[in-house]
Length: 445
Ligand code: HEC
Ligand code: HEC
Image 1 (cartoon, helix red, strand yellow):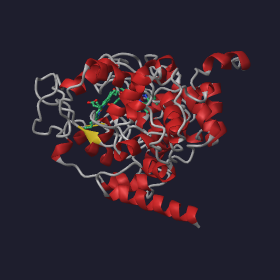
Image 2 (cartoon, rainbow, N blue to C red; image 1 turned 30 degrees about the horizontal axis):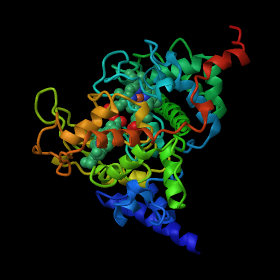
Image 3 (cartoon, protein in one colour; image 1 turned 45 degrees about the vertical axis):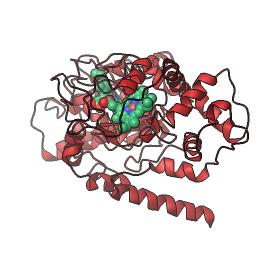
């Protein structure tokens, strides 16, 4: 009875989320229900001055709730789809110039490339974010241009600056390679007969396809994208030192100093109080899943030369691959309602999604254009707001210089470093092609 009640409340809050412009993430709301508070009796001295409200912010930073379901991808939990997606993620042949997803999202660098701006076929305009825990995000990409993990994958494939490929090329490579085709067919059934190789190959790049063929190309492409989505759902972040510290605080126990020392504890206190970080990086996911303009001055010397969220809203609403579209497996789910309910408005100009801070120490450089090299630079930015225009036309009113001491800054950095945990499932983070060669000798031609 009670658990039903909680379920109903969660559904209700999910629905409200669709309607309201700002609201807590479903996951956060769910976590709040189960979260105990932090007893004052055994507080470490670094937290002794915090108010009840500040302590409850700390209580909400952990644990991470379960991964939200993605009903728009009916293969999301399918193991074989994920295996096939893993194969595709590392497959350089999907691109005519040999760029794979992993070229930029390199597992050895927490699925980033370590560069300020991404480089594939050409230079991209944005920094490469990690894909670890991307399945938690309400909107995908720095500007939230996609409303599902699977629909995002078409963009790098077809972006001339990234993989410089197209869906027909991708399908042809899969159709014509025994191992890839087998991977496809194990999940989705026979590769469409109508797209078979022939003298009039319907998967040649520049031929005119019949409407029926084109519809099959898109349906098959949707399967490929959903396999990539299923794979990336396995790329999650594990428990971090901060999680163990918060759990100890809740239990009134001593926090293990070897992994969460006094400096991290002071940084935590600043994060939920005078640092103001919690206003946007909040809850166990460390993001409000909303969009903000920090006032960075663009290359043109003025506030934001990148329309960001404003252009993204137009894009995602018009995108035939969105959660409300024909390729979605749940067009009337909350995700579908969310994209239909989106409205464009002038203040979205220059806004970027609040990134999660989990695992952030592993993914320098920082911000949507990689302009800040280290976490110390990021903290210095929030402290001084140097390089930001003072509340411009679309500026963000919450940000004010913080006046931190050197020690405060170091403490915040230390706290940010405590947010990294190992990914719990290492078999998903490796390139599967190496072992494949050993276990399945290539089929004779
Ligand atoms: C040339 C480098 C490059 C390649 C190749 C590339 N990406 Fe990305 N990826 C980026 C950049 C840059 C962004 C940020 C784009 C933006 O938000 O404007 C991004 C964003 C993403 C995100 C969003 C993460 C988040 O936090 O919202 C996902 C998921 C993703 N890529 C998956 C993929 C997949 C799957 C492939 C292969 C099909 C791929 N990427 C290929 C550079 C690359
Ligand atoms: C007004 C909301 C807001 C507040 C307050 C805020 N942030 Fe952010 N944070 C953002 C947004 C939005 C971005 C991405 C901005 C961009 O790329 O242009 C960001 C980016 C970051 C990044 C870089 C992440 C990455 O992957 O590149 C770090 C680290 C960070 N913030 C830490 C903090 C800390 C520490 C504080 C408190 C001192 C703080 N933030 C306060 C919204 C906020």
